[in-house]
Amino acid sequence: MASEICTDRVRLRRWRSDDREPFAALNGDPEVMEHFPSTLTPQESDALIDRIEAFFATHPYGLWAVERRDTHSFIGFAGLSLQTFEAHFTPAIEVGWRLAREQWGHGFATEAGNAAIAYAFQSLRLAEIVSMTATTNVRSQRVMERLGMTRDPADDFDHPGVPAGHPLRHHVLYRLSRPTWSWSKGLAG
Ligand SMILES: CC(C)(COP(=O)(O)OP(=O)(O)OC[C@H]1O[C@@H](n2cnc3c(N)ncnc32)[C@H](O)[C@@H]1OP(=O)(O)O)[C@@H](O)C(=O)NCCC(=O)NCCS
Image (cartoon, rainbow, N blue to C red; front, side, top):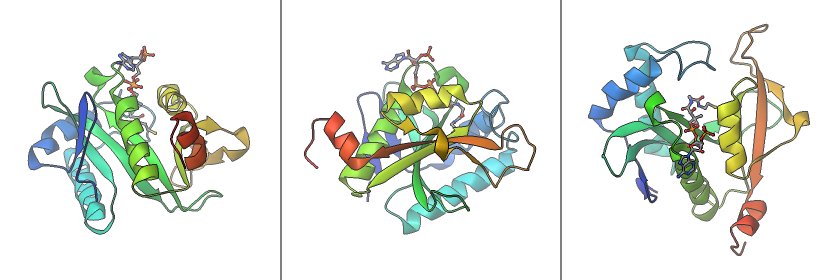
């Protein structure tokens, strides 16, 4: 199991207690949470860390804390999560990311997402990875496209966790298969 993955500029690692304060700050930022139904309170943010760490205890993957290697500062999360809600493509393993606003625009989400995908295909030997977001979240969709993921509009769906009629209910689904990824990276199998 990967407790840590390093790229040129970021480290994906297990969570520490001093991540709680900066994580609560980014979860309370309306700009970061624009495409989610609401911001999180510090208590909800802490509970999310607890759920993520509990998941790591029983799975060889999860949503890692992301740290910049130059400043050693915590900047958000990226990694893999198991989606089991009722939909035509579930159960599925999703690659996802959430970074503090001041860390956008440097390519950190793409770099971390790429490392998580490499781990999913090379170490976990998954056949496919998905990623999903509200139709309005164009920035996140650009990350998915930079990672080589593709969208078939026939896969679009209404997220059952968002109330009917809510503007964030409609979601796009992006997919990436291991053969496609391996081919694009020039790897065998
Ligand atoms: C989604 C999110 C992670 C994207 O962050 P991001 O910084 O835009 O994404 P990337 O890491 O791919 O960075 C790409 C940007 O960095 C720039 N960049 C600068 N240096 C770069 C480098 N060395 N390599 C790659 N890109 C670089 C790119 O040009 C691009 O800039 P642009 O936004 O002006 O087009 C961020 O907006 C976020 O945390 N949003 C809130 C949470 C969220 O919605 N999560 C997804 C829910 S499904």
